[in-house]
Length: 300
Image (tube, rainbow, N blue to C red; front, side, top):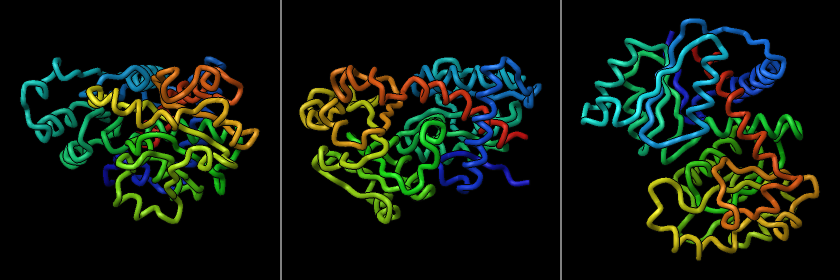
């Protein structure tokens, strides 16, 4: 059987992604009841972190433990990757020892190279271009709170970054309309925009963008590796802050999501983050359940 990888949402079909979301919902119920299916007994997940993380590491480690397996954490300074071993070699060696590998890295091409040399499934824990694991959690959160996301209006505010790119893929797969509200020079990838243009549009004015929105999503204005641009970005993105005035332009039952960590008072106001339309804490917790379902899909 051909090894399956999860590098972007496009790695799986819509039906496969929906099956993962449905299974995640069932696994979430098990956690609440403290009654776990140990479907991954004696299976091992290798986790390589070239970018730091809280939610990704904890959710994968806890998930493997609850499923009866084990996770091994590898940091750049704690592995031969940090000493210059080619990623192709690391992929071939690790895939002889573990059942699945999660890689959190910088260039997406590095992830693709790693997967091409791996004998076991590789999961994108985040790259500079995509963050599909977060989208699984976001989709689970929306389905739990509002049902199907098909034909809904989703608005992304801020940088056309890896999260934005994954939402663009999701729009095409799940048939919803995505409006990206961003300043000039911060648009998402032009090639991806071309392939998703039936589902994705660009809007400069944030108030116009969020009109009739069912879901409003944002992210930090300066991602990891962009800290030196912080001051410049704060000036350019200031009009795109998600605050109560902006949310009043959306539908009354619109949800607010953020992949976290959030910078209160920058990309989102305290009132919105802690307000009744915010589902960010549930969204964060759903990383655990959606990734458990993903691991089962790849390994069972």
